[in-house]
Length: 368
Image (cartoon, rainbow, N blue to C red; front, side, top):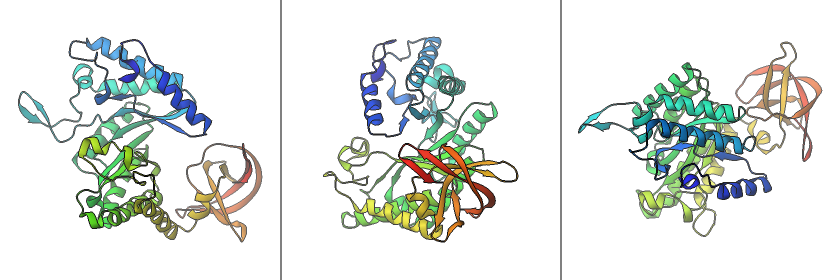
């Protein structure tokens, strides 16, 4: 609401300043969020005609995405539109797919289609995300979100990614880590099978429900499990922590004082940070090809020698040479030239005869 306090007048000052800072420091930007019911300007009220609300929302999406085209690489287009447990109509609780917000009441669910299409038209290369909370471990709300996303895809709406928010209670993760990881894995796979990417978004972990004496170490173990599952999972494309220091977490104002993040209020490393490192180590032990892949700055593309199939990834090599290496997922495009053909195996056991490339980046050349 702060960008358009007065209808039709966009205030770009803070957004432009943020983008300039990220560009200066070569930081990638994810836009959050184009439409969210809790951040509507005050002039969006019951008196506003539906057609004017629709025009205002589409104008906001088009204006924002167009202004930062090619700079903001991903957008949470629709945030938290799925119904929680029940909604209330005429004093009675009823089940429904969508949260009964002013947007849904005035425009209906097809406005979601229009918002995604408007964002895609403004920047066809941007990654467009449907983002939701309380769905990470599956359950009834995840089922409702599945129905929503499935319907969007069936109608040809350009939804590329589903964001699973990671606002979790530590006690829900630890000590029941194996069971929790199993539920997370099943939940993510179901959406990945629809053909969308999945990410863990908005990660933080509340610890107040643990005895004070064990909070930090328990949080460490819980973060360890979450990080390991994210890295090992073949479905997760990325993860985002919702802040880095406990000093400024949104949790304090919503749930009460807590210590949910990786750095304390003095910007010091917490055991939670070390827990994330532990999770990386656990992932490496599961898939030994990951260490070089994670360390590598290389980006590249492979071309199957027989079928000309393109697949993207970071190439890893071992001390024994090019013929003992592999492919990890999730690399960006790069300028490349043919190097040699070799047998390779990726982190998940898939092998292929591929052609390796050498990539050119700003910093120099890297084997990829």
